[in-house]
Image (spheres, rainbow, N blue to C red):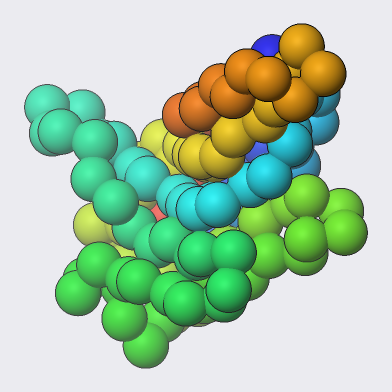
Length: 125
């Protein structure tokens, strides 16, 4: 089992900044992609940003130039630095981690696609 613990959400004024963190623990094995998604009321969950094991990043057009995703492979943690926040960035942000691990003395491989519990980000004056 993989556990994800998120932190860093909150209330911020337009133009402000927040930093989200998500730490993975448990049967992590080899983490491939770490990312952040968000969901606001009445809308589908959408990808915000993701980073591969090799450091390749991908951003939604709506956050390019304002958000920066990074990861610490030693701490198994992914971060999302959010700057110049707008009211439309208000949503619940979810951490997502994909990877695999081996068990039964390396004979079996299991992939996982784990989600955090979500952290609320509210941008309002």
